[in-house]
Length: 218
Image 1: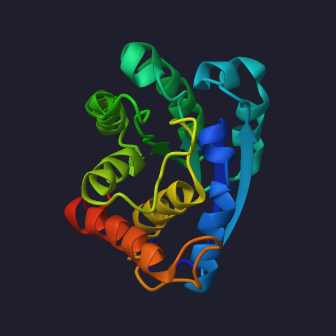
Image 2: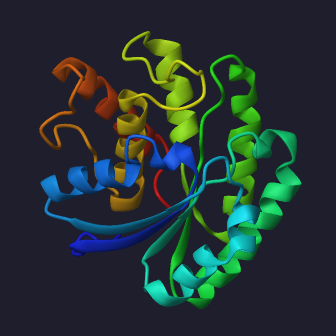
């Protein structure tokens, strides 16, 4: 996004990892605090893979008709570990359609299950390799989650099921999206988050900002 741009139109395609706690809405709230309007649409099916969305057709129609700046693709959370080749096939399908529509592909790199942190490396590599191949923007949420959990016990990012995000987890994800798509630090942006202490909000913002400095946006 250029420094002069004042709005973005985003389509999110995914499942409950995107829908839980309204990630698109959290991102839009952060952006508006910086004078950027984000219009967003979410197409979400519980537990769905990108292939499920492709076969259903709604996401394909939305990409064709929507005039989006970015289409955000979130693969089913364990598929990058179990079958990265299949995931890559799914992303290639959508990326071709996204480019035909004049939009850009953004890949929502998700996080490992709480009980299996060792799988994060495979998740990272799956997203980053296909991102490099296609010239897509990788939003490194999983990588930031991993680093945050290694350093901080609170706020807790995983919900009780060890899979989905708490409000803190979704907020950290939104901060990473903010840093990646807008190219700006989220530190000091906005008025906080319900249920989180100001110090916790600052920690989460700083974690996203650190990743922005380390991994400049393509």
